[in-house]
Length: 308
Length: 232
Image 1 (cartoon, rainbow over the protein chains, first blue to last red):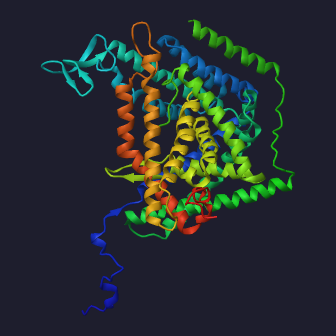
Image 2: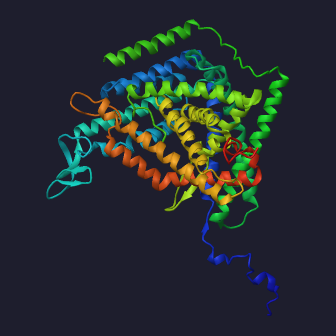
Image 3: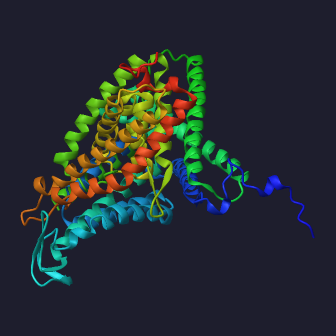
């Protein structure tokens, strides 16, 4: 049967590229970006959902939680004893149980962060090349010690007790800090938590910017997801890497334009409610007996951890 | 680049908190002067924009991806002082909500990425002293400013890591915080960012600045402020 496809559809013109010769790149990384944005959105939902529950920890004044967060972050950073750090881990875990959070989901995230930043990054420090000490597990042996640029390479390279202790302490510090920070974040509505920053003299203007940015991120994440999937639904096959770069530039520009519209709308809404350029955030409710008890528990625990 | 908790000693993170607090106080005042009563939602928008830029991953040769910090592009588009506020807010939200960067390290992270980096990027961009109509040069200048600012910020972070064994060690010589000394931390941070993340930052900065130049050049702060770059 004769080929009846018109010539202009078969020929490759000047402005067309032979599809077989294009160095193609798929959009999987953009998918990842959108998935990350989506995850961020869900994380915020989760946080808002947990923070709204009626529970002992959720009901504590955000100011108390803010003081506790700073205090515990300092305590965790100064404690250098491995056993004490383990006690801190147990203490924080018990707070999670009391708060009735979705422990599996939150700890999955905590383990991921602690594994990357607290374990993988510092793992080489367990070797005698970085932390000298008695080798307990030899990895590689050379004929003699050598010198490379500014580095001394010993004859035997392996794990040392001192090195493993350094890795363990850094891992537990990262783990404990992240878990306590997420405990506070997951049990406190973000806007109330931000207002408690006033206690350490953070100006209202800066706090207002944080609150607005938080809300904009929420809106923009949805905008990105919707526009990207609308775009992808009209796309068939893969596209060139150069077009991907143009696409990213275009998407970011589009987000900027959307941001501008949202910001102008916000500004007009603020003006209509009496905004004249001066920001004053309303102070929060007073401390209750429960807040004082919570603060005392944290304070005494911190002292015990430091002196232990 | 986001320093987690546990890597910096109090001797390092407390002074950096102080420097960051002073820089933000000045930045808020400077920006309020520059952008009238609309400044608050404007800065909130810039912060959200900065946060979103950090979410965009770009493919890197070798099959992996990396994301930009966004400080360079924010500094060129909104000005360095606005970038101080915007990127700080983005980093604070990241640390509090997503655990990306430590609570004790907020001051250090903000100093490196929200104070040092935007100023480096902005003044490197301004060094080129070009005409905005020459788009290829603008693209090149934006790339270099993004690239250099990130690499220099990474070296600064490497120094902060590298001094830890010197200032905080136990009696038996064990590191109490970041265990890598200057000989390891600085080359590691510098090489990684010179060969990988610096290129991503440069590309993201150049792509976005080029897009703005084509579509809305009037928005770009670096072309509005002083020198030959001024187009107002």
